[in-house]
Length: 254
Length: 254
DNA sequence: GAGTGGTCTAGACCACAGT
DNA sequence: CTGTGGTCTAGACCACTCA
Image (cartoon, rainbow over all chains, first blue to last red; front, side):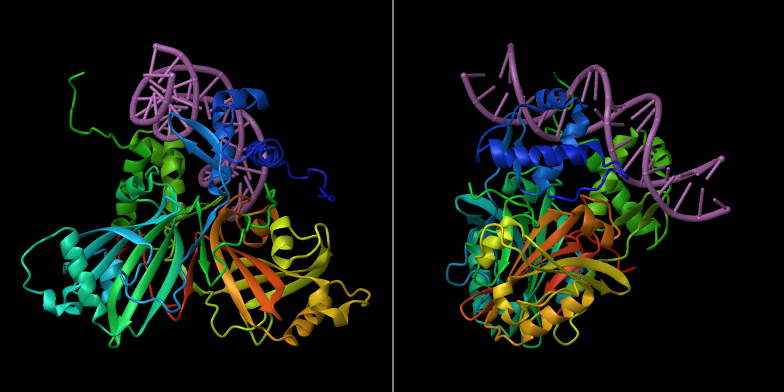
């Protein structure tokens, strides 16, 4: 752009590096192409490897690079739009809602979830685990918390604790009237178990979507879904397949 | 190599540190309290400062710490819920929609925005700048892109290029029928100008909300809003004031 | 095995806020 | 000024992938 002022405030090296590499990605690389390794790149730009890594980290945060230990750094494809709109959705598990691979256990939910469910402090709930796959990639891992009071028919059930139990809980949920739901998105870092299922390192940035399901004037269930922040763009509405770039920065049409 | 077969996956030091400090935040600190400085903390835990910083960075990413150069590291308050629901919303600038401090210019939008607006490659649009303030804190900076074709009455206007022009553009927008809108959320890093207005450093993690406004079968306007990821939880629905914690981890009720 | 990214160290200097 | 977090260096070793 035209009006870059003289550097009254010298920008950090890694910031400049990020810009330079970002432009190079647009002009000289194609999606999936692997970059030179970090030591070579650092030497090429005359900086320490840690500084180079700081630039790569930001580019990865913006979804422009993908780094895999033991493999290398590749140019990431544009983020995929993942629909998380709340309209006309029903209980989880209904129809085919893009989630797979259920599991179930009984566990004490995090305090924040217990607060939303208005359960007792250390009361166990059914805790289902699901995985969302899109375009062949795992994009989100979810925990579904259902207090026993929401599925009274299941109370005295013995114990197929795995997928069968999960299906049973969902089946019972469907029988309730869903009054509405409620969603929130915030930034988080992947827990170890989520990271494993998402094929990321623990601590990777994720978008945490908290959903509350209302029935009969109370919160009947809560889900915590953690989406890979590097590969996902969450869409609310009908724009799932439109390409949107990062934060106003340009991206080549490829 | 017969050492501890357990610990088949030794967790990194910074990960362990993050957990330890996170628990300490819950039990031994109150919101707003300042932590010992990084050099002291590093010495106390017997690690290099860089390692300690890696842990603090993650905690800041999760919204649990706030670090300010020249001041220190403080315990952050819970994230505030910021309503970004699309239902029953109208054009930007209508009623009082929590946005302030308008400005306007003509500029070439980023390629991704031009694509959504279906404008020519280097066609200028009206480019409004707004700031969203919540609880006395700036939480988001926004760019609103309006192609001249969406506000034809303004075509030959000369040039109050500042706030007056901004109001004029918004006034013209209100006259269009709003067919619907469309929202997407993704992770980004703050541009230098946004960072300045949000009182953050360039590159800070932000949640980028892209909104398309439809009118007469086409995209009449587009906004790019960058929300501070450290302090904000975006809510879709009517749960703006409910406290939700980070990604299933516990947070004390304070 | 060689090569990659991930972690960690022990320093140094800089930019900024509050005296 | 002092003290803080932010940046940067030049190494080292580890964990992982793949041929």
